Image (cartoon, rainbow, N blue to C red; front, side, top):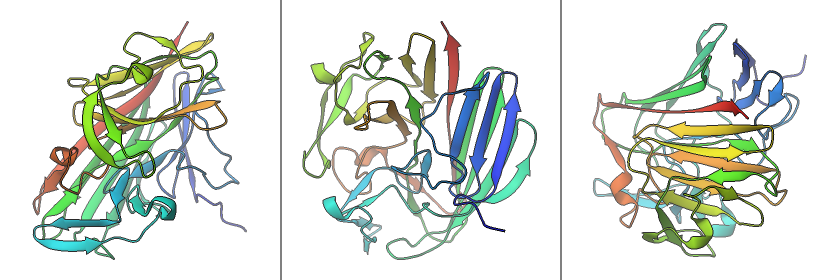
Length: 294
């Protein structure tokens, strides 16, 4: 008997919603409403591409040259994005998460991040995917179960399925991270550019995004409206950063809540978003997806 590329598939449902969460990566592989797929996704016989649905722990986005200094100690992480010489999206890729519980409407998984190259802490991370009549809520808790302080950030990488030539986008963010165009690493936080200012809803059209945004002032909601329905992606106040990306296929939009911006492990314009967990400390972030019918 062959093993699926993402391991066990945990199915949950509530009202019109159904979802599939994978063992490997705890990825939200599918989210449907009355049988209509809301995500740009992949089949259970396939491996995910372009970080589809990936949970980004213990940091989201990029670390410059894979290097950072924490509590006076310099660390060198493996380079996972060679073209830009960065450590990208944390340490969770390919990790099989332990099943804690599985009911009709909820699946709870956990993993332990142990010391390894470039990382010297012990974190226990728990992810809860829960469906209800209002959609999907995801709760992510990181606990420092080791004896040393730990730097921490979290993000997630879902893609919403949408034809960008007609999809109308609403973004609540008033600030944009200016980056080096070659490596997408931070330079400064500025007012959002006219190109990326979607505080007034408008069609995505030919707009290109690979952009970190912030400045929503607390909890926020992003809306992607098509002729059939509107998908809302939301996050609570613990996730003040947001990365948005338009793939070349133009049939989806990556909508990525984050607790901190790119390269937050290093001193710079995003460093104040870094979470430091003392031994015994924990932090929880919540985000979710729902569908609003036209």
